[in-house]
Structures are given as structure tokens and as C-alpha cells.
Amino acid sequence: SRTGLTSAEPPQDFVWDGNGDPNNGGNWSDPLNWDLDSGYPDDAGDTADLRATLSSDRYITNDVATTVGTVTMEDHARHHLVLGANMNMDTLTGAHDVYKARMDLNGYTFTLGQQTGNYMPKLSGGGTFVKVSTGSALLQGEDTYTGSMIVSNGSLNFRSSNWDTTPLMTVLDAATAD
Image 1 (tube, rainbow, N blue to C red):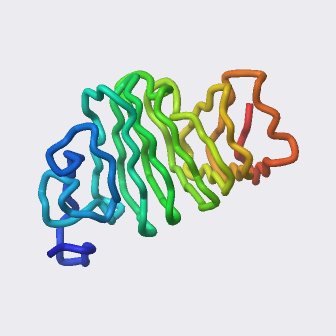
Image 2: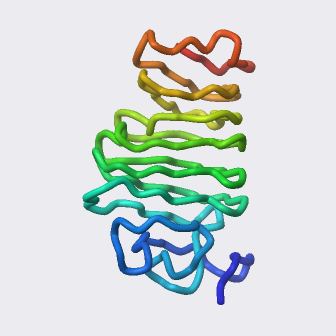
């Protein structure tokens, strides 16, 4: 079974199917939770599509250190991506808003290149959120994130004055935080 891409394997597109149950949570590394049933997104060229119509909250645990190119979440869906290991993501996207989704960093590091769509999922828990690349990301209010933030490139924007990140944020070089 495919447990990791090598340089000889092309990047792949994966769609979360929760092993047949669209509301089923589970582990990121379980191949049966992805439509190909033969691996999971773990390469910078891979894409992970978490879009689905949900009737309840869905919890997906990133149980292995993972690098993935693009993760797509459905607008207004109640996805909960819980880190059980560090996660690197080049692009987080939703067609418009993924503000009902939540990412619990759970003490780990989430590194994001850029975000497309209007808003990122809400952040919760502790850990480290790192914004890299020249793109931008927009965080909204009412988040329960207690960790630190590093903006090393591009811009990190805050939609609400509910954020009090003064003791938690480091902005490097030409990066910005508004």
C-alpha cells in the first residue's frame, strides 16, 4: 500500500470519504478514509479534498507529520481538523468561507503558505501557527487559540478585535500582520 510518495510517484488528488460514511471522522493516515483506499495525502504536490455535505460535525485527526499541497474544505461545513502531529500545507482553500470549520493545533505546529477564499477555519488549542509564503491568510474572531503565531512572509490579517495576540505573535522581515 502507498504510505508515502517517492520522487518516482506523481502527486495525487485525494477525496475524504470517511470509509463510506461522509460524517465519519478518522485518522488522516488511514488509506480507507480516502477515495483511493491506497494511501493518504503526504506530499507537497498532493491535494486533499475534505468537501462534503455534513449532517453533523466531523473530526479528522492528522495523526502523522504531514506535508500536503492543497487542502479544500467545503463552505460552511463543520470540519474539525485535529492535529496529532505537525502539518505543513501550501494552500488552504474553500470556495468562499470555511469559518464554521475548526483547526485544533493541539500543541503541534501548523505551517500554512496561503489561504484562498474569505476566511480560514477557526483556530483552537495551543501550539504554533506559522504563516509562510507571499500569500495572505485571514483569521476571524471568536477563536479559542492559545498558542503562538509566527508570520515569516506574506500577510496575516485579523477580521475582529476579539483577537489579542500581542504576546503570542512574531512578525519577521517584510511580513505583515493587520
